[in-house]
Amino acid sequence: MTLDTESRVFLHSIRRNNGRAVHVPTLIVTIPAHNEEDNIGDVIREIPRSIEGVGRVEVLVLDDGSTDGTVAAARAAGADHVISHNTRKGLAFTFRDAIDSALTRGADIIVNTDADNHYDQSRIPDLIAPILSGDADITVGSRDITNVPMKRSHRWGNELGSRVLRALVRLPAGVDVSSGYRAYSREAALRLNVIAGYTYTHETLIAAMEQGLTIGNVLIPARPVERPSRLMGGVLGHVLRAVAVILRSYAIYQPIKVFSTIGVLFLIAGAIPIVRFLWYFALDGTAGHIQSLVIGGVLFIVGFQVLVLSLLASALSWNRRMIEELLLRERRRSYGASEPDE
Image 1: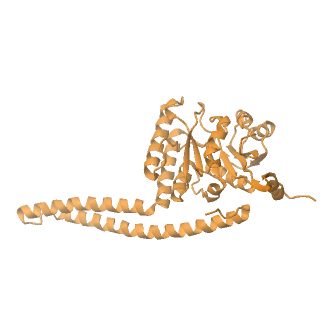
Image 2: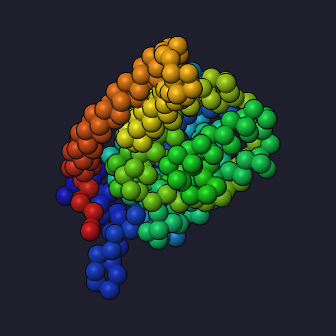
Image 3: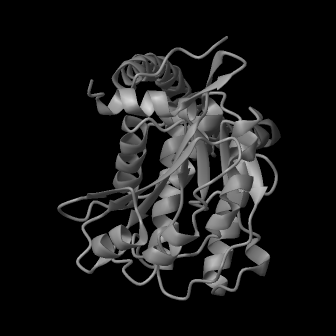
């Protein structure tokens, strides 16, 4: 009898323990890559293929339209799966396609890493340990930015982004929000919805916290990389785009907080000239400072409208959550995942 691919994957991940079937997780390491012929082989060869608590380790390379020998180098180094985009689509799309491909191939845990050899792949067992123990849904391999040799502008951008995002969504202390070295449980990967077209690192953390997923932090020293990222542009452009992604994602997932804060700021700004008008009116009894009253009134109207907009945004947020729940159920059916135990 010939078994299809899904049957072979399922049987491979089952072991017998005292006569009972025990599911042994499959780990798939995804590597988005663009023109990484010189580095990707070292990355793949460093990935441990035997990890305690894991039944099988596979490597999946998602080539983002490389024009060099990245694909050949990946295959030569032992990559189990190599998938290529016909044209370059960028980091966010490449990451999303890599995650979907890993889920299709039966991954129970997904580790995503960079192809530039920036991260220590031998530390994958440490990265996935909180997921295996059930203590986290997502783990971030955080770099100690202060001890990584890099340009001052790179360090400043990473530290600023980490501080801002940790303050906004209350991430665990020390989480490196720009790190692409992460591990995801199958359930967390099924819940990922990458909307931004530039980078996924900040958006996915905001979405994960909004969905109640537990994020773990594992300190893993990184290697210095002198050249710019192949999947991203220059530092200034990256910082500006990343800030835009953070603000947009936060507005999508926390609309009440965002628009209510903006509305209250407009109301406070409107109160200042109105108080000024009342002060001078009380002093001399004239309406000579009517311009302050007009400006304050306009600001009050804008603030009130923004507060109303926050209610509409909240309603849209509930609609988004229902769509995401339907999408999650469809993904579970498509990838053969069962409903999680309560």
